[in-house]
Amino acid sequence: MPILNLIALIIYYVLVVIIVGIIVLVLLRVAVDYADLNPFAWTKLTVRRYSDPLVNPVRRGLMRVGLDQRLAPLVTILIAILAGWFFWKLVTSVLFTVDGIILSVLTHAPIKLLGFILFGILAVYSLLIMMRVIFSWGMTYGSRLMRFLIHVTEPILGPARRMIPSVGMWDISPILVILLLQLLQTAVAEMLIR
Image 1: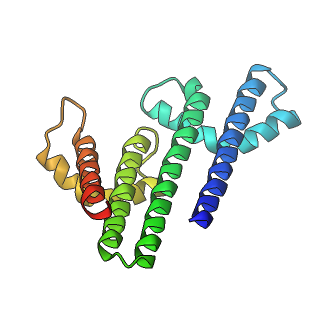
Image 2 (image 1 turned 60 degrees about the vertical axis):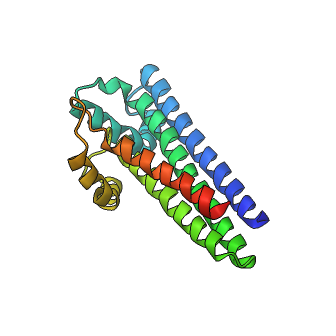
């Protein structure tokens, strides 16, 4: 549908502008820090005021795991890009599902309708599990986003973690659950949507 394509395009460009803005702000912070400006100068205070909410949580997370806190700006940029990618995947999955549901309703295809609904649920759930795994490396479990991700994904990951043994210190159950969800997604696409 043309309206959904327009919505996707607008969301994509807004997302790119936000990511580029974060990257520019963090790089500006690095440049101001290395320029060794007066700490009370307007430029340094302004850049710090806007970049501290982005960089400081990452810095604390790096210190918690024993890594060098000077990596915080680089990790902040990588997290912004990764979070933007996750959001974009979520948007495309939802819009694909909505487009398929509308098309199924208009063509009176109840089996395709069921297929698109299942496909969308599996896609969003896989994405939420990936987000939980990636964000658990740098976010505290006290943050709202992590609490939400744990609350939503634990009903599947909890039993999987008990059934699948960890490999050394690594918990591989999320990887296997994502592979299983993608297998189910492929089966739904082949059997119900085709």
